[in-house]
Image (tube, rainbow, N blue to C red; front, top):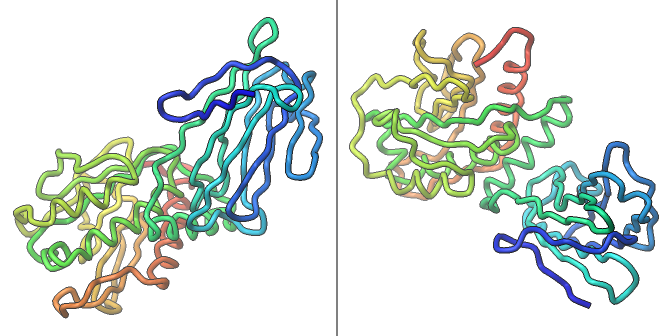
Length: 319
């Protein structure tokens, strides 16, 4: 028997179109499904799913979702083995980190004439940090509870680099908040997020959830922009303004949400009309202690994600 591992270098394999046996190893309770349109009739042998040859006439998806929770927890790696034919026949294997995900397609199956089956790996997003995984899971649970689906538009973080935010940058607080927002963005949108600085609104700092926080950390020493920075318009994006105050009321820019960093509850924070707002309470960046995003901030950011999606999915609303 030859077992081919699918990955970045080799993501497609052709097998004989025979009865399939799909086995799974998961670090936490999970359910293995084979889905199609319509879903095929399958059998189960313990933890394995058996797909008869007759069910392989159309495209199918091998899907994994958590059991007993809305989303996979940190460190949730899943490994699948798919065999075509009897024991000892050729097979493929794939593994993926699904931490924070509410479910994922791992393999696509497509029949090829006359008697073959193409098995293709579904590329997964790069693994997130523990903090981003926590915020993605919390936001995913909150969206599911509210009956909301992710947005098609990508999230753009517009990071204020005006002089008043300098302490948040130099102490790493801005990087921690961006790391947390990466997880929220991964749950809120199906597209890849990016970030820009108010000092260089036309310069995308980085693209891709797993790289954003590190890229932002590398810009902490950038020269601050002038005071009174405002978010630049970004058509086709869901813009989140990240600063020490809500986004200014500027008609030329559209902001879906403001993420406000504070040293304690700030009185009378007012969001722009039609825009969500969340206050992230952190330790004083000048106190000489590491600034961390705690559990209460994770919960607040999850509610913020729900508010953003709710506002953008209202009839007639768009950004």
